[in-house]
Length: 610
Ligand code: GTP
Ligand code: SPV
Ligand code: MN
Image 1 (cartoon, rainbow, N blue to C red):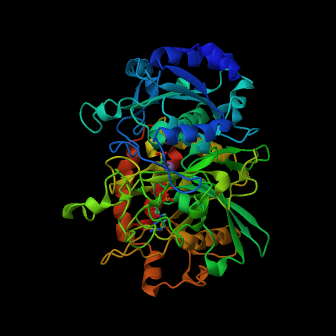
Image 2 (cartoon, rainbow, N blue to C red):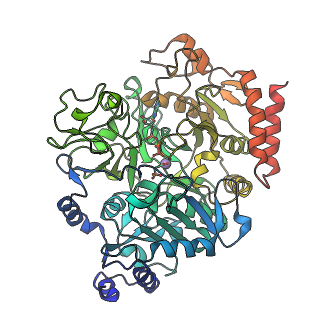
Image 3 (cartoon, protein in one colour):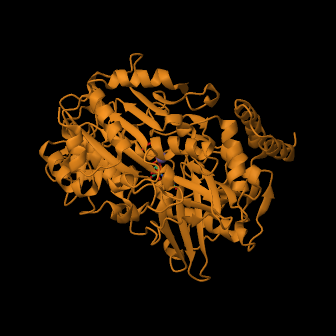
């Protein structure tokens, strides 16, 4: 065992409370070495990881990693929010008592990093100077070098972010121990994995994974679960699984900022990185702020502000190509230091590939390995149609690599929010866009977001379920209180945002084709929403909001069948009447749901009639 204090001293980690914390967990995990990380260490760590074959070269300044084959997505069942107050139990937060969980995790982590290095990663989930900086500092401990490389891309990392804290104790303690991945019983009754956020102690204890949100603790464990709890407990902000983008109308000079939530793997990254369709590119410019998390608060000027606490993108690879998301391809081009995980890899040419990268997979199979590392050329007939890449395979790249990143993306002031949108994979019922001008109806709409779940979490792919505000897997406190907190925060804004529900995923009932082309054309729906906000279009009023009149949508350069467009803008009243009954049951699960939300539900229901 190394002398922990000597290591911390030479790394200039001066925060005494952080030192105590590192000492304590070094003792529990019994790691052989301690190393404090700053961004300057990235190059050396990359080389070490290459030498150890933990990552492989994937072209100039690009890297490939493969996770254990039973460790490729978040596990919702194994994820727990713990506190010391049983009143914090909600429907989705999988609440457990804090003392029980701390004892459990300490037991699992005891001695579990023997023979390994424990990396100390001080980080900040905000731009320095942000009004929410007091909630943004953390120190992740991890015994996994690849996790360090990902954190370096996804968060601001360095001792400077914790040494000068006004309250030296105000960092999140985020402990990650990988465990013996081959012997954890993933998905069996003996599953040993535990991903716990002890929210009222600002402590995160994750054991048994090295993948994504299970292991990069600044991202969703801190950025969403801990932060949403902090935002509520302090009564000052919201932390949501939202993308955030800007639109500039070059003709009028107006700038808009839109944020919003779609469930995991349902289009946030693609929308935030979008370029205007070619035919509209001369007039509109879209800027990227964030693709997965937004923190929102009301500024001194009474406006609702939003910011992206992350520093990078952990994006879904599937279907990313020149047509769907050209900016993403630029963001993972040679020399960006991007890391690909669980895509297909060519061990001879070091190329990577995933489903939808090109229409057909590479014809020459020589050197190609699937995401499990098995040779494609050796596949037996029953494996012929297995995907080459895991559906939840991803790329990790830093925000600055995104070509249309907003020039003010790191401005601690954040940006004023004009609109909040919700959406998801909904194959019927939900039109292309419906706008909602009333706050309670907007919050109600977010709470009743229903969509098909995806491969971003184990075992839920395709399930139709409600995912309130797209926060279901990250919800940290009871839903009734969450709704009240939303009404309170957004209700303080003097210029409230407009709300909207969007759906890029409606399908033809007969042949299943997507009715809307999606991707870059999605901007058309947002432009209509901004025109509605400006009073330039009137739309068509329906019980569930205002939908565009056909003539109001800018369809320049778009070929779409008239019948598909009609369907996209129609409200199927019978289908909606049925939906209102499901919603009633969904909302009834939540204790203490504010009366304003029930009133909104009754208003919408009444408008449909019987
Ligand atoms: P998380 O990072 O898991 O939170 O996901 P996300 O919401 O950022 O999802 P992302 O944008 O990465 O998209 C997930 C998948 O949906 C990808 O395979 C996309 O290609 C696909 N997708 C995104 N937008 C559209 C769209 O407009 N139409 C269609 N058909 N597919 C889309
Ligand atoms: C999600 O699942 O919503 C993600 C990826 O953004 S992960 O970081 O794994 O949670
Ligand atoms: Mn996400």
